[in-house]
Image 1 (cartoon, helix red, strand yellow):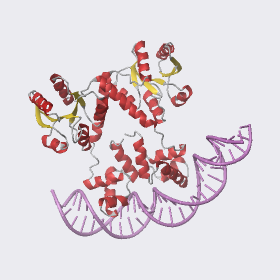
Image 2 (spheres, rainbow over the protein chains, first blue to last red; image 1 turned 180 degrees about the vertical axis):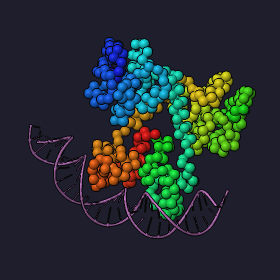
Image 3 (tube, chains in turn cyan, orange, blue, brown; image 1 turned 90 degrees about the vertical axis):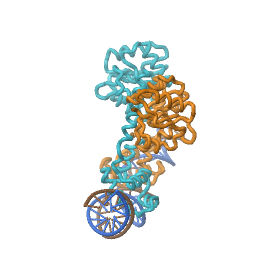
Image 4 (cartoon, rainbow over the protein chains, first blue to last red; image 1 turned 135 degrees about the vertical axis):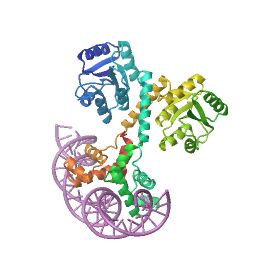
Length: 213
Length: 213
DNA sequence: TTGTAAATCGCACCAATATGTGGTTGCATG
DNA sequence: CATGCAACCACATATTGGTGCGATTTACAA
């Protein structure tokens, strides 16, 4: 019996989805909620295999609820419910760990098929949306690359590169064949350009601007 | 005149592509190379608006060539040429900043259309592949999340979370209402578990394990 | 259910090293 | 003349590694 947990603020749709899924052999609705603010506790309580998650909900959006799950290492399958094929929301959902999405206007047959697809490890979504979302992803990727790295000089860049690899000033000096004082001198300039005040801040800011993950 | 640069090790295909594209109004083949090891210099020399890049090439793969471009902040559009709709390669290409791909077996009309699509800001690829690639991306995302964060205790986690936000020990103490020595105590344990010896290393390792970007 | 060991959390002390800040100087290059 | 690179100085703060202790919580065996 596959346990499905539903988050949908529209009472009628929530009811219809519950009835539809409960009536499907092999499926069981373990919960149907109007908002997802307690999603962590509810997920632990009901232990679903898949969550149907509305995107737009009061209090906490479905995407934020999804993020809470993933941030806590909860890998339950999550399929987003959406009114529009709004690829910005869908992109955000996929990027936050959603397995796919279903349009609210879909036929019952399609809804069940999508749930089954997701349970089987698939990614229910229309192909054309997938293409657009992927292109958006590539676009974001490229935007990141275009950001100039803080107008650092070549040597400053060298020093920063070693900093974000965890090198101490001493090790940087040895690696670049310069003195510690020279490293400190460059560091001062780097911190000024990055507008930070510590090595950690410099490292964090640089890693966020780079695709290191 | 849109300048197209071609990288294709198969001499016949390279020739056919050159002729096809040169014969298309508005397009100009500025170069046709059998390998991409000198892609940085060649890109600067020919200044193309779009590169057609074979994936499998001797010496340096097309994906690695693409990575070299992106690592140097070169945002020229790159469309991969592939024999198979092998979504693993395609996934890697998209992830490395490719704008799309073309199957080598495609008709001339489709090849030109794909190039035009990419030049217009599109992402030429079949929708079904896009879906699979996106699902693969979500899968990778989820795999990352499943990695336990070093078996840290709740408090250690609290301290680490602030560390990767750039907090100093002093600020962490203030934030968590504990003494500096307690922070130091937790830090020692954290460094032990992460197998690092400095704040920077801890920050770097943690950010690499998280999807902070 | 109870007792015990281990883990966690908090705190303290010491010494050495690393980092950060502000200032200054000089040489080479464009 | 401005910039980049290298270096020096002094001082204050932050960090690292080591050690020790007590109280509370958690896990596990009897």
